Figure 1 (cartoon, rainbow, N blue to C red):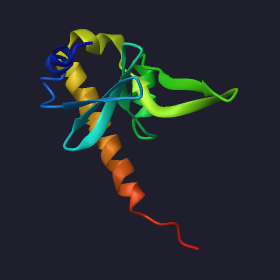
Figure 2 (cartoon, rainbow, N blue to C red; figure 1 turned 60 degrees about the horizontal axis):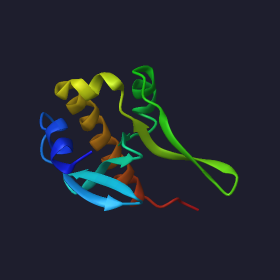
Figure 3 (cartoon, helix red, strand yellow; figure 1 turned 30 degrees about the vertical axis):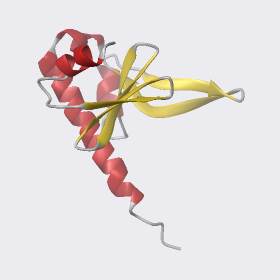
Length: 113
């Protein structure tokens, strides 16, 4: 997917920035990663708060194999219906931004002994 097409797809959400990474692209809002493109598929950041909703809508978790084991990534494929509906895509993007903010906030917390 071309960068301009990706920006158009997320136009109802707001501006995104795009960076090349891992043989694909990462895209960001407010300086936080909200999604990636891997093998021409769009995956949005998710967490325990958003995973069930995106899976119920048809999104699947990004899983890859490493050293003979499966690795679950914190990203879910965008439901197909959102690819044709910028307002729906904006809703998923807002959820992804929320997940990214929660992940960022969690990085600052240290486990108590």
